[in-house]
Length: 124
Image 1 (cartoon, rainbow, N blue to C red):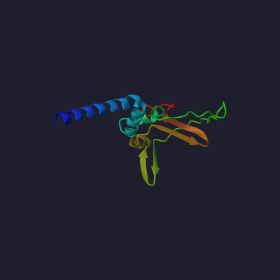
Image 2: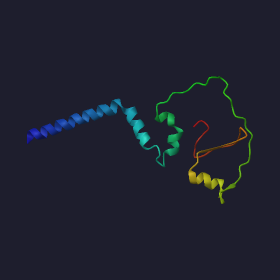
Image 3: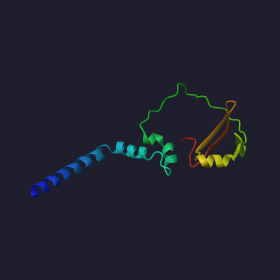
Image 4: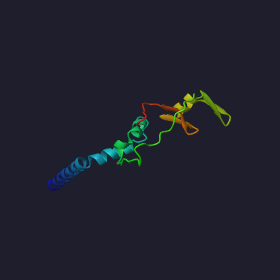
């Protein structure tokens, strides 16, 4: 009985050491895995998608030019409501139902409307 107990204690100790080493040396991979598992969590989704570069390996791409093309701006007033297939809805309700984080409207190749919601920014 004592031999079995000693074997179990030794096995548990060995397992603890292995787990400790994995956590120590693979912490960044484990942290990414935990973040990915909560990617679509309702309380974290906005922050997760706004900070993707912290969650995944990435490589910044260099533009082929030092002066990238910027879209011209031609501000337009957005309607308060719209109708689609016989159904009317306010734009505010549409954004709230979909938990919209950003809305960009282009018209004739120009930025007509740009809005960031739920704490997002132009740099997200």
